[in-house]
Amino acid sequence: MPDRLATKVTIAGGALYVACDSGLLGSSEQGSEALQKAKAAIPPAIEEWMKYFGLETQLPAMPEIEFSPLQSWNSGVRWTISTLSEAPTKATDYTSQGLQYLKDLTK
Image (cartoon, rainbow, N blue to C red):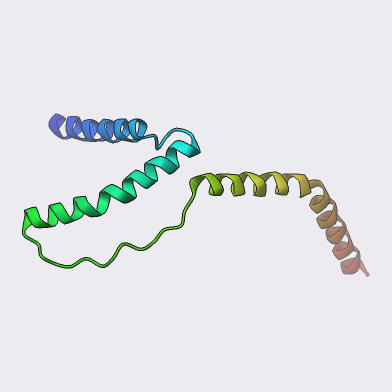
């Protein structure tokens, strides 16, 4: 049982080290660079493993992923700030609608 725990801790620690070392947990620019490196390294590694294990199956082509962590982060920040800035107005509108609904119920 302790061997399993040690193995799990070692794997988790190694994964955390690789994530930190490659820049995945850094800034958005570092994350973008790490994503580009991974996109370049994964297909050759899969082909090498398939040859090693004797699998001659043809894999489908890797789909093009147009993903920019930097743009996603910025759009998320913009949406959050926009929503927060509209909150007082929306609260007033919803309160007015609720009061009008209650008035209509009591007629």
